[in-house]
Amino acid sequence: METALALLRAGEVVAVPTETVYGLAADATNGEAVARIFEAKGRPSFNPLIVHVASIEMADRLARLDPLSRRLAEAFWPGPLTLVLALTENSPVHPLATAGLETVGLRMPLGFAADLIARFGRPLAAPSANLSGRITATTAKAVAGQLADRIKLVVDGGASPVGVESTIVKVERDALRLLRPGGVTVRALEAISDRPVLRSAGKAIEAPGMMVSHYAPRAALRLDASHVGDGEALLAFGPSRAMGFAKAAAMRNLSPQGDLREAAANLFADLQALDASGAGVIAVEPVPNDGLGEAINDRLSRAAAPRGEGSE
Ligand code: TXA
Ligand code: MG
Image 1 (cartoon, rainbow, N blue to C red):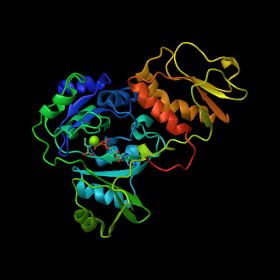
Image 2: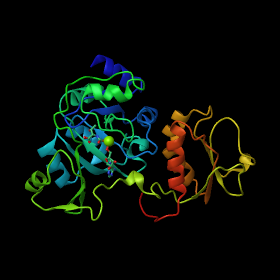
Image 3: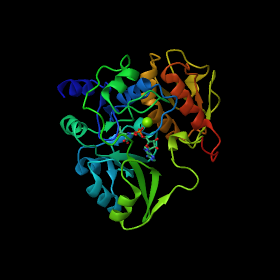
């Protein structure tokens, strides 16, 4: 517990047991810490992550619980249910954890993870503790087998009792929609919510991180820019500048030193800031495509994609 706390305070990731599956946890309010999660998993894209809380009071500070969501939280927390909720105005959850969405998936886990969050005093973002594309880990040994050379600590809490990820639901007006089946059954949800659970038509999992045009700034993005055109804003990377940068309508540098982890942590906030400048076009300097750069470029190309293009 003490080792895990020290690492979390230092912005590191820690693998922790939960009742569903092992989670790869980091401070959900710290962009660089969240970036380290994607880095450790080797994830090619920034999916929104589930953010874990230790109490309903903590959830209330992060998101708005409508009456039905609150009833479900009271019935199933701590436990394998994730509620997708609107962020509060000043929610401390870092936009990298939500992939820039205006909603956040919240869950209160059971046991060690909940104690850790309560002691830490902040929410933890945690996807399953496996390499991207590999099998979900439900023991500390399985986690270590995939991630031992990438993270400093795996907390061994024995085998995860649930063994599948949490059920994800979202309240839409008065209806309840299933986004991912998981540890809480539809029947149990229907019993508590007193209404039928709607299933997403045609696809089992709605993964907003996979939408082609997902984070959609109003401005158009011009990628791999080597010069800045009239009226354009500039999203820079590293120490050297695109030609004509001095006349940019607005400028942000993802990382002046060219550090990809820092760039990942700044990505959503910088895009939002440049969009808010009112420029019609954001010119984006090239970002190297290795390590976290692959995820950054994936997000940039999604942000640059024509609006309304389908998913996947
Ligand atoms: O059991 C679990 O839920 C495990 C343990 C560690 O708690 N966590 C887990 O987290 O599976 P993760 O980050 O792998 O789940 C992310 C998925 C996304 O792919 C998406 O389907 C959904 O959660 N999700 C997250 N935020 C969302 C949002 N704002 N809107 C809709 N879906 C969201
Ligand atoms: Mg997973």
